[in-house]
Structure formats: structure tokens, C-alpha cells
Image 1 (tube, one colour):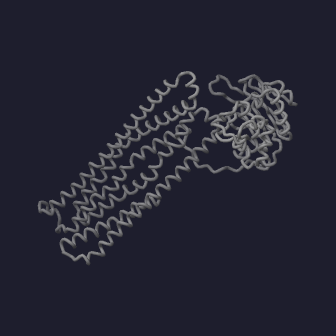
Image 2: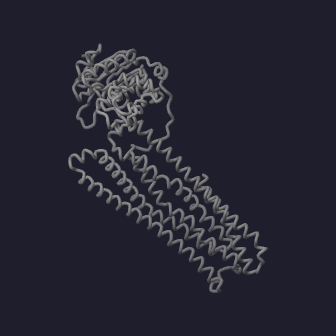
Image 3: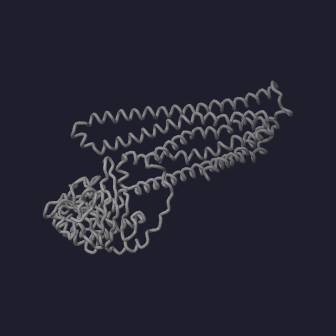
Length: 545
């Protein structure tokens, strides 16, 4: 509101400034007034110029601040949509395109909110207001400006349709290039190993050149839009100037009264200002096309635009149960899960019951649906059927409460760039150093971290680069020991460990799980033998072994 009101207030002051300036020149030239008499008006003009500059600065600052707040809000909404969709949805998207949408395409909204909207308010009101204001001073000058000014937005809109389509194609190409480049960067070592580095470098060059050509096509349309504006603006200003000049020379006599110097100068001073808001509007008109194209691309990537959503209340009793850490009860009835790319369902009508505090092993050959079942129980995979935790339907659980109640460790745990200790604290950020070392000891992390020069403070690369698969699995297990979940879901937690380490880690898992509900997927009969109950997945069902 401040950014949109600033040009309007500045425009009102501009009229006063132009009238004062015309009156000063008229008094100095026609009436030969002394300088002392004009000093007050001159100081008033200087004050108005300074005041208008301050208002313009305040309006631009308000627009920039508003745009930053809006972009932050949009990014938070997109991130919330990304989290709500879950990893199953994000796996089907190019990570580079998602990152480009959250960063680059949201940034494309900046010019729309910071510059285009304030300029649109000024362009919609000031040219007409200035032209109408000139009608009592000189009807012909006012009519010339009133007729030519509306033609500019009309022709700019015609050009703008092409600009919007070009911007949409440009942003789509930019998103594809971002995803393409991010994927190649992630697999750089593999490409180098197989001798594909030069070929992929050529592909990146070709994609970049295609993006450059699209960028130039957008700029050509933007320059055409500016040319349309300048043509009509020059035509209007020249028409007023020629009319006033011919009137003063006596070649035109279309007025009922003589044209005074003050009236003529006022018309000449205001004529360019009628088109100034339109010039400003044209300068930022391309921002609108860019923003619309960005919003379209975001909607395609995120399956629609995110809406403001208030966090719903937690399910009845869920908060109390999550805080207690008692074992959770799990009931699954008629679970049906489809997998993309498969002709049949992975789980079809599966059902199971886990009593609070029960420790159960889940077995079955690879690809039968063990990981699918675990992800469905953690609400990380869409499913049909009924799943209840502590008697509450899984869909009704508040997200934060569910993540406190349920702990999941998959086959490929996520480790972030940072130290080993930083990755451990993802389980509980407020854990003390003593609690951290105890969790690391229970997961056998100290066995390899103590041999490193910096111990638990040893930095890791992205995705845990620097650790083996078994070491990364143990770091993820140490996170578990820092938490207090009621339901523990583990997917092959000992698959990458030797027999001795596997036995020690399994002892700690079973000890930690006392009083909690544990479901552990495994291929190893020796691991399953440690559990009092074993379930087997077969033919889309879950049965007791």
C-alpha cells in the first residue's frame, strides 16, 4: 500500500511544483518581477523537489521490503508443500528443478511486487488525472494527452501476450537446465569414470546456448514493448509542443482567450509527466510476464500452488502419548500400496496388529514390499486402506507429533554436510556432549570415530561423503538412541555390518526398544531369530511366519 500510494502522492505534489515553476517563469519574463519577490516560490519549488525525492525513496524501499516478505512467505509455503508431499513425491521430481523453483523462480516475483504493482497503480490513475487537470487550462492540450495516453497500455498489452509466452518458455528452459546441470554435477565422478565427461560438457554447452537464444527472444519482445511506448509518448508530447508553439506564433487560434505564458509553460511541463508513469510502467511490464511465467512453472512442478494452511490440532491423545514414550499400538487393515512402473500392487489387502511394546521381525525376499510397508506406516508413501497408531487414523496425526511418536531408519539414511556430531544432533538438537558420546557408543560409532583426528567433530561431505555404508547406518542408529519414540521402524539396520558389530548393535537396539514397539525388516535369519515374533511378506499379504 505504501509503495502504491507513494507515486500518487508524488504526482499530486508534481502538479503543484509545475504550476509554481510556470508562475515563477511567467512573473520573471512577462512581469519582470524582482528576484526577492520570487524567492519564496523558488524555495517552495526546491522543497517540493526534495519532498518528492524522499517520497519516491520511501515508496521504493517499501516495495522492496514488501517483495522480500512475500518471497520469504512463498518460499516457506513451497517448502511446507515439499515437506507435506514427502520423499515419495519428491523422488519423482528432478531435484534441480525443485531447487530452481524455490530459489530462482520465486526470485522472479521480486520485480512484480516491488516495481510493477506500484507502477501499475500510478499508470492507471496519473495520466488520466493529469490530462483531465489540463482541460481547464487548455482544452486542446488536455484532449491530445487524454486520447494518446490510453493507446499505450492497449498496444503494450498486445505485445505483452507474446512476452508472457516467451518468458514461460524461457523459465521452463532455465528450470530444465538447472535440473540437468545439478544431475550432472552430482554424478560427476561416475561420468569421469566412464569417460563421459567431455560428452556431458558438450551437452551442458548446448543446453546453455539454447537458454541464451530464448533469453534473447524475450529481450527482443521487451524492447519492442518499450519502442511502442516511446513512439506514442513522443507523438503526444510533440503534438502538444507544436500546438502551443503555433498558437504563440499566431498560426492557430482555437482558444476563446489568449494563451498566457504561465498556461503554456504549465502544459509543456506536464505533457512529459503524463507519459512518465507509463514509461515507468513499461520499464517494469516485463516483470509481470516473468512473474506469471514463474508462477505457472511453480504450479506445474508442485502440482498446484500452495495455499496458506493453518496447522490443524493434533489428534486426540496424540500429544500425551508422544510425550510418554510408551509403546505404540499399530493396526493395519486392508492395506493396498501401488508402486510406479509395476503392473501389480506391492501390497494388496495386507493387515497386521502390533501390540504396545511388541518387538517383531519382518522378513521376505527383496522387492516383496517390506520397505513399502514400513514407509506406509511412517506416512511416507500413499496407500489405500486403514492404518491406525494408538487407535488414531494415520491421516489424522499432526505432522510434528507423528515424527516424535514414530522413528524410521531406512536402508539409505540421510547424512548432511557437517561434522559427525552435527549429524547425530539431528536426533535431538539439545543433546549434551555426554549424551552424544553415549549414543555413539551404543551404535558402535566410537569404534571408527575415535580413530579419526577430530573424533566426532570430523567433518563429512554432502550425503555423508567420507563414511562407508555401514558407518553411515551406525550414525543413523545413534540418532535413534537420542530420541524417545513409541514406534521404531528399522529397514535392514545391520545389513552392512560384520557379524560381531551386528550382534553388538542388535543388542543395543533390543535393549533400547524395551517398552517400545519395534518392527525391524531383515533378510538375515540370525537377526530374525532374536525376536519373539516374525512376520513374513508374501503375495501382497503380511502373515506370521
